[in-house]
Length: 592
Image 1 (cartoon, rainbow, N blue to C red):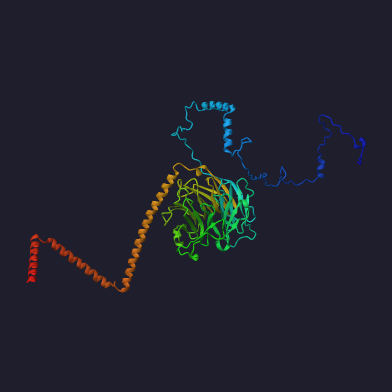
Image 2 (image 1 turned 180 degrees about the horizontal axis):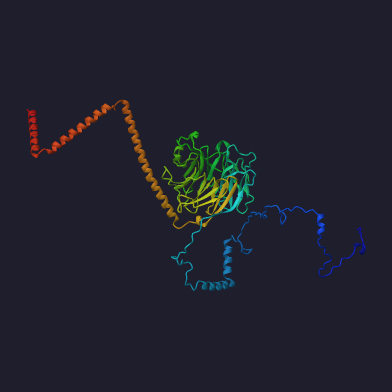
């Protein structure tokens, strides 16, 4: 049951009603000032006070609401066929096509379209497949070199870590895998995360997938044959293998006793039939080959001993690796000592696997890559310079940049232009070099971050460049078309530059070899002179007497030669007859 309460009040209790009307203003009172009242008031001291016309407000930063994207997959099935037709059955589809072609509506449609087509091709007077006006080329205005930031991926953890390795997804570069690691020895924070991430270009706020290794990843690489698999090198020396379809945990680890003893600084997939082979390099002086289907132990190993004896204690620490699929038996290793070691995998012995070395840097070689258009020429980065080498010249590089103000940490060639390469520095600057345009200075320098840049990776189309910084930010930049499009006659011009520089270095190398031979012969001669001096053969008095004898013997020989030249032919004939007489007499005496 509902209970209702009613409260009532009389109208007169509300007071008098207000009446409003429209009328002009009138003056009701006018009070004039009275000077006699001034003595009753105290004048207040004037004071200037600044006032604000509006109320004070605090400043706040606001951002628009973020739209989160979610990746969803669909299965596309060929459509447009009737339900009773199986698209996979060739006979049914052929019968259906014949039935459609015999349909009157289909024939009428084709006839109407053919008339329009004939009109468009102008009664077949113009061949639509022929190239007209080939000689008239449109002059293109040169575009200014530029690079703009497209997206920035930030480490979601509180403790900032260095991005030590990057790898683009092989299918169009829609994703970017980043390895996060603190490379400062014995200064790792206790609460530092061990995770690495795979980022989607459409969603920079949240990583698409988290890789959860047992030890921080120093490097990682996508499989070019299978975009779902990755391999990474850990800080503790182990090799980890992921299949993104099977979760965030590694599918398999390499065993500790057969892994590297130092951090794995580089790992690369190899060109093989199975697509499961990779090899890694570490500062422990070893290069190990792996099959990710069985990571119990490496399939092969190489000790980087410069004496070619395979002694691990004398091995050179490896920092970078280079492998070109077009040269499957060759690979190169960059070491901490500034040496580039050229190796042959198919050699029978450990000594034969190390072919030769190149020396030109004063510090560790952090990056190395062959030119994708000219594999005999390769790029190295170490200390404060970037150098371009030729396999035929082992004494020095054929081209090099000026010494920079800060360390160069990574570099790579452009996959679409043979004359362009990229470098990153600890100043947080990305330098783009074009050796056709300028050799001594970069064509474009971009300040990417206030922190040092440690890693660099370019997309296969040459337009997007990813840079990893010290504070865990992966910055993706888009390069202008002038630096990401192949220019006219560029390959031939770059080939001429490499050939010219190689010939010049060969001439200098031959000259240096001659100088070394002369110095060696002089040193040998000086050693012989010292040996004689020790034996007492070079006594000053004996040397003077020997010089006098040689002088007088030369003078006597010259005097006799001149006397023979001044003799008359009669004297020569008489001397000749007397000599014959003496010879005959001598022979007669012998017979008697």
